[in-house]
Length: 189
Image (cartoon, rainbow, N blue to C red; front, top):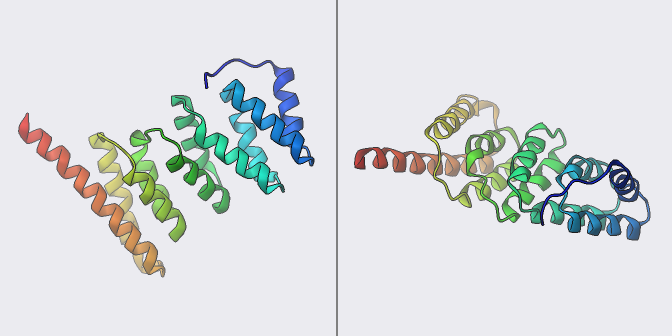
């Protein structure tokens, strides 16, 4: 799916179609967007997810977001996830991350931060994303991730969710293992 420029008129038409209460019109727009491969509509897709009462449309948009294969998507999606206020939508977007077949390794620290901010399910989604990252990880990403984990541990007394604490422990172990890999690489040089 190659990204192409789309004129303002087409974008407006897609916006109108996506927000239509008629499911077949919204689904047709999703299909057209998928064929166009246009990243200009990404903010529109997220906006529709926030507002759409049609679950089939919502599922089709989430699938489309997961299926888009572009480096631009990785950065854009992570920005939307970090800025998203709705825990439900944030969780859905995190699911798109691990359902996509793209590498989010440059966002290790951001994913660790997200794991500490949300509930158990968000932490679990983040662990799944981390386990699917191929690396290698930049040393500054690992250090930043460790800082987020340290901050979480310092505030742990406020946290009652033992299941989330266990997931965060698994994430800390993952980060530690990755950091040991970097230390071993430095010894080999």
